[in-house]
Length: 345
Image (cartoon, rainbow, N blue to C red; front, side, top):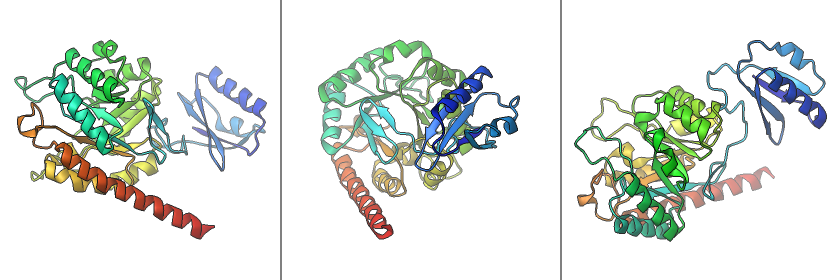
């Protein structure tokens, strides 16, 4: 349920209204926009009579949200959410570039890649310490030692780090991690989602499962937000279809769809979407052009000898070229918006 407040609503009456909602075990979220202020109500609102709320002097109207996701709904939160990722903003016009290897392999490897991607313009460093793999015989990551290496690279370069949490029992190892990634395989691991929602305030990068619908993706975000952590970033990385020419099938049309449905930032992972390093550049550029709030790219200094996903990993030189093209698209979009603003004025 959404309560739309009257313009210049009396703050005392607003406080009384939120207290009333809280007394009924409803969690109110106030969102103030340019045109109106709304209170989003999270919880069981079936026992609340909307006509009684609408009769209050401070209330303009009451609306029911029909979609099953509430906290993630743009109706609930009209303005774009801007997520602070260790000092780097993503969302609301702030564009994040996350880059680094699929997995952390050594101190020298992660540091050299971190230095290279930072020089090229990356704003966050990614790297896997705990790796979910299809085969039990494949490299599973270095675990706690990999996290130590990743954190050391962060200290050396200043780049905030993004890495995947597979099991909440390891959460204490993530104290110095800036963004916790929930991978595609765990998007519907609801117990894990509830745990990171209830016991962590760190930004959560939630990847789209390889077989989930858009609504299921948003409902997974809802699990995190309903349990107390509203710092969620959605990540599109393609889904599994009958097509075999690429690793996954990425529908870039979902970016504007998601921006219409939710206030949460949306980043695109062209590495997992395509599976081939030479396809990452055009998809990264296209994702930027269509309005993604960021991109996430795998970069390795020696892809042929990478212990994980070398085929889809760009070299530092390739990444630098992609960043040049991404910056050009961003500048063009900014110029276009400026021109539109001038013409409207």
